[in-house]
Image (cartoon, rainbow, N blue to C red):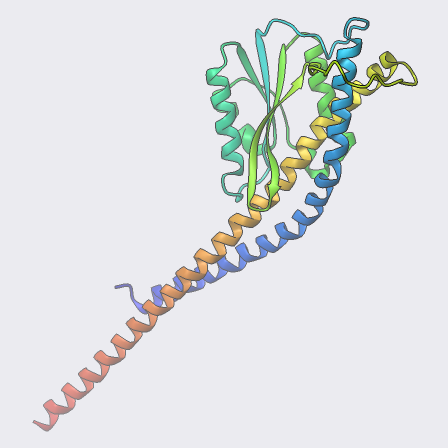
Length: 283
């Protein structure tokens, strides 16, 4: 059994760790509320905008040619791996990395990776072709900063560097659940429309609306994925730190029990030694 000093040191160390994990949990909980409100408010707009453009794409695809809707034979695929810049968030980053590796391994086409977030880049760059990475966007997560990254990806697709581009990220469901999502980014493909669907009158023309809104919609799609990942990160970190705090509390309690038992045993031995010494003197 460890001596009393060693046990006291371990109790002190575990208590310090517990204070850190508890503080990190509270910080993530505070940030999560803001991030959750942002993505919840944004999803309906982004979904409706994408739906509108997909419908327009089907209506105008024979009348207008756009570099972001061009479907080519798939020879090269780009996966956008969205992770975090920091760890201590459970399986948040590892789930994305595993999904990207699995997709690359099973895809018959040539594959490349673009990483957003330091953790994903650290791992994926060792095993796969990483054609670019971005780590600063989460420091100031705004539409303008996300649009710069999206434009870089859009330019690569328009230049035929890639034939398909997919987003791989954690979609926020709740604080305890993040869903790994693989979402097509480019090209924008028209959805099959119902023949009985109402034919709306657009002003200006369908072609003008489509040409103007398409780049903005693609940038908004990436921004939504980043927002989803940002909220998921804080939810995952809050959950992980909550579990870590609970485990530290249990370990501290066990160490205190061990310490008390060892202290009682030491006191009992001292008493026995004193009694034995007194009996020897009296004898």
